Amino acid sequence: MSEASSHRWAALYPELGTGPVSTEPCISPDFYARERDAVFKKTWLMVARDEELPKPGDYKVKRVDVANCSVIVMRGKDGMVRGFYNVCSHRGNTVVTETGDETFGSSKAAVLSCRFHGWVYDAHGGLIQVPEEERFYSCFDKAENGLTTVRTEVWEGFIFVNLDARGSQSLIDYLGDYAGHMGGFPYSELSECYSYWTNLQCNWKVSHDAFAEAYHVHTIHAGSFPNTFSSGLANVRMFGPHRTAAVCLSPSAELRPVQTVADEIAGGYAGAHHQGSTLPPSVNPDGMADFSFELSGIFPNLLLHISEGLWFTHQFWPLAHNRTRWEGKMYYRQPTSNSERWALQCAQLIARNAWLEDTATMEATQAALQSGAKTELTLQDEEILVRHGYHALEQFMQS
Image (cartoon, rainbow, N blue to C red; front, side, top):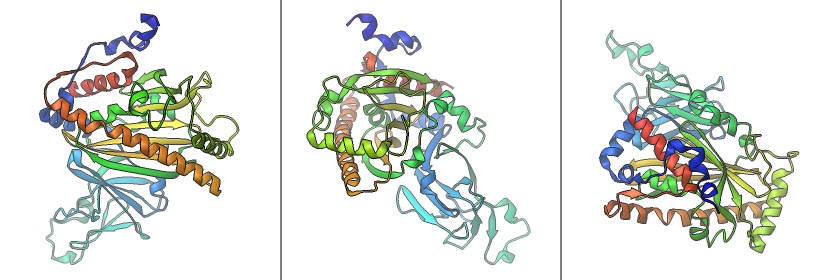
């Protein structure tokens, strides 16, 4: 392999450089404090899916620890989804009692009621009922005491919030050309969801980066995917702070017999409802026969992967400079037979095993980095998505 071909991505994106990357963003409490303000309190964050709020009055509360808050997203009677901080205007109690990192509920009247003193809010955030209202003083105005709104917008069924009340950039402008590249996929048709989450003792970028390259597949995934994927990427593209690339099958890929049967069944029912490919036109535009899935990232903390008949996400929520909540979700078409359900369960088990293999490295990586023995990360050309992530982070930190 020539140097030109082995350094193809550096040649295509010279602005990203080729030098080592500092470990400071992964280990420094001070960097984390600045990152919270410059990134997570300023950018669009995905907190829910349309399918999680199917009816008017359905709501979800998402805890966003990195910003010291929780956000309610609720579907109104007009079908619109709106976001609010989960804080009552009376004395600051949580309006919805939270049962974990995610809390779901539904109100036929599409209202939210604070259990502390019974203040009631509608799906627009307006305060509509105050018990013993006459006891409040003349300075009290219900119209001025609604829930604090959070900017909320939806793209392809993904519900995003932005905690920067003074920001003006829309979600579609933030996504830029990425929206066109990944838009048009039948996300909502593939709604059978398998999810897995865990809290990890590592920085969110350590967790994120483990899923953002294929260089590790021959070693880490020798158990779940032996000789299945190529370690090189294809069709790498950058869209501002966002990124995408194709992951391809290895020329020597040999699936286990059970996996082969499961893939044949799953592929059959996944494609039964469509003529031709379900992928957006700009994904695998050359029709590579060895294409497996599109590995894409929406800055800062969401990875979105799509393939024929399925899609999955990884999301990395910072809890501290050295702690992260990782959430993995896979989506398929709802099976209609026992054989399809069996194939789906096989895919879920393989994914679970692969994700466990990935997460098994993260806490050891964090502990080693925090020793200070190494102060830089050395990246090769096929880790271009990782390099781009640090480049995008640096730009946000400087701005």
